[in-house]
Length: 385
Ligand SMILES: Cc1cc2nc3c(=O)[nH]c(=O)nc-3n(C[C@H](O)[C@H](O)[C@H](O)COP(=O)(O)OP(=O)(O)OC[C@H]3O[C@@H](n4cnc5c(N)ncnc54)[C@H](O)[C@@H]3O)c2cc1C
Image 1 (cartoon, rainbow, N blue to C red):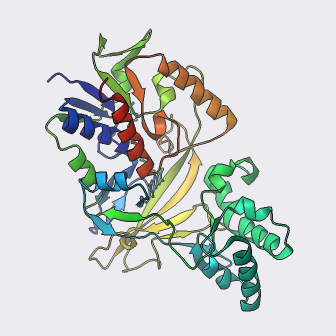
Image 2 (cartoon, protein in one colour):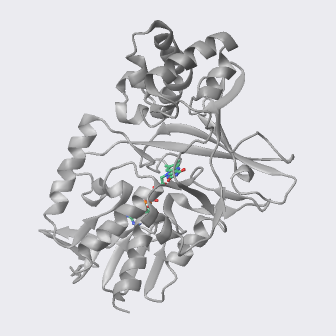
Image 3 (tube, rainbow, N blue to C red):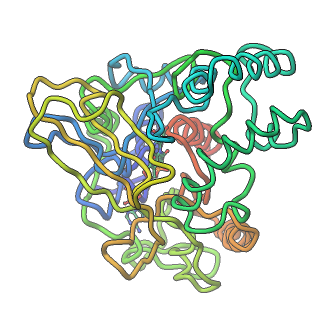
């Protein structure tokens, strides 16, 4: 069948576009995916214990974007779930983000009361304060608290996660986890939070269910796309429609101006012959071990089994030539990488029939809701093209 639209990548970005073009405009869409499954990094499956595990690390859906929530809700029902994280600090498991409960867990009562008073007086109950802002405090007790939090919760975790000194990490990354001045132990404070009742993969299959959508797995689109002047050829010929590309932008140019850097991860799954491994879904280990965190999947979506499955995350450098390290997870936001991305992006904007979409092509950190919002916006921009 001839196609009107080609989409590279069957992740969230690619499939939202495929769904929109097929259902709203009745376009015939070809999706090319180099992996052997749908869903990109959000892919999940049931393991031998019947537990739904996330192959590429825990994915918790949370958003305050009503349009995104309503859009995805057409393709899944939701298991109500609000993510809780504990951090292992000074041999205690304490709530993360650091909040007033964490303060009382780690300080003696009198000192905690004094610090709470100072914090609430300055910022008010419920405020979410960046650790960098707290570190600029001149009041001695607050300054001491900020250094305590920074050293015990941020420094070693960040060093493990990014493989460099905390000083070399952009403020934007450090500020992702605030200090919360309330007793709210939830990791996210978004209005809508949940896990697809039958998992992400089922939701993706529903997104791609139109007979107008054809998904081909195990196809590296780069073997079929070729740049020629200001056009991209498909199978050696001019393709009359649009091509949406959700892969790595530098790969499209065969890395001609250099490689964009990423952090990768190794996920080590373990099955345990006991009903429960830890009290919450995720426990962070900032100061011990080579892994950053352990997630127990039963605590995200309950499963009727007396066994349990966990995953440990070992951060590592990305290397496209090494099968153990060749999945690009997190863009590394250095000045050099930002400039290199801009260079590729400028080059791509001169090519008239291809549009970069998603976390790899736009070299951004997108949460799932950002990826959906971005794909919906892209559809609106190109629906009449
Ligand atoms: C460890 C981890 C945990 C996360 N946890 C959360 C979370 O808890 N909550 C949250 O909201 N977000 C989370 N995210 C973010 C979430 O994974 C992304 O928002 C989402 O995956 C973005 O979708 P995408 O389609 O843009 O990219 P991807 O999911 O990466 O999809 C891109 C697809 O394109 C395919 N592809 C690439 N190149 C080619 C090619 N040449 N040919 C064919 N196919 C190609 C890839 O195989 C992939 O399937 C997490 C991310 C990571 C890394």
